[in-house]
Length: 292
Image (cartoon, rainbow, N blue to C red):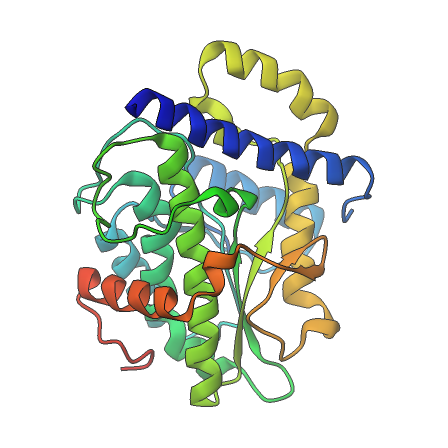
């Protein structure tokens, strides 16, 4: 039964991916980084400075699998006393083998969701101070259509009783959407000039697929080169969301191709959103108030 459940979860995830691919076939895509890979981060900074003379770009090390790394990153950023107008929560792992982080959290849950939750919460103060009624600060969470297949059992947040990498990934992406909607409610009720939205970039040709089995990876490569978006094209969807005048002051949306679409039914469950928020605060030792 356990094997059948894993196969079923995988098939559901692949069907969602197929639907996204079919959509992308008939719709044209949109033509201070922090990272856990210092070499790649510094290379990106160098490239940006070469492409745009005078660009002010810096690199900061951040490992979202480590809550201590997140807290140290925030302290370094706050020490620089810079404004923060845009936060893009983009880091992710997918289909990794069963394992836990140094904090005892399942890896998908920690990297894809909980690390972003902590990062966002700790930076809310500076985001609020940086936003104005005419130019809100913007928080963007890069999500995935995989959340449509996720179950809503969020009771055991540190692990999964019957581990499936497909289910773990999908659950972490649902948590991202739930958090985005709850965060927008908190910001709106507090009257803060900050918005929060979820962005689905579609199927993107990145290293996220490196944990596929060898046959699946070999089959995926030519399809990815032909049909998937490039990383640059996917980044364009996030840039559109943070820069578009049409989205000024607009939050609580799930965006695909720059358009508002419906996320999963479960993601709109207000009780589930609030329960996840409270549980996450408990796990991280944070007060429930966003600016406390």
